[in-house]
Image (cartoon, rainbow, N blue to C red; front, side, top):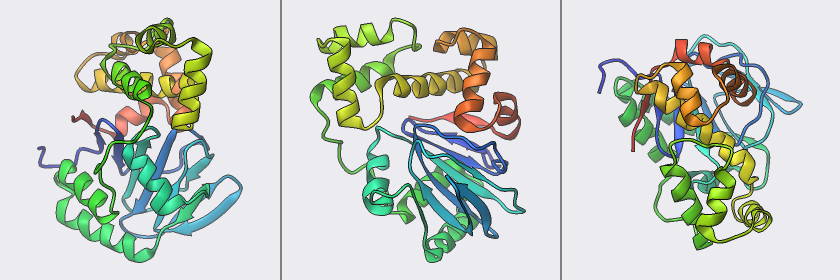
Length: 251
């Protein structure tokens, strides 16, 4: 690993962003959040509630933003379809749009940061362990949903015919597949595919491709389309995100 922290650590089911993620525009997207401050409390605005804390868990598709602060902020974004996202729902959210985390947990995260922040992979693993989040079992989706998720992960990009292709893979009509996905996963299939398109574009940029090639390869109409979706989903332009992060995908 690098001898400095890779400031965005992208795994197959989540991303960890470290520092530089303060004061984004209010936004919502299909990922659950864990947000911690390594130092002082930070201002968090979720829907119409404003409060200060050292740690918060936020459900997907809930509008939020983070105010400016003087310390390091750690932001986890969890794929809504992942085992880890389900564990957040059960262990922390329990049906609520957000929950402020116990400061003892936040203190443990700060300790982990001090011990492992020079190695982003170790930092990621240590924080997940402190939060008791494990990929200990496979989510019991319908086998066709598992097949769909696997197919999406293997696609080079999410193109206009993506849903038709997936219908052929699982032998379901578009309406039936959309209904089953929403029922099983809890988000719409079309929204999930947009999130996956974003993931693929980021990954291609991380491996050295320029934004034009990466965005079109992932399935966007143009780099401007990619940037607009990035702003809408993450509250940050791709240019701002790229300036503050070093992207690295791990499997």
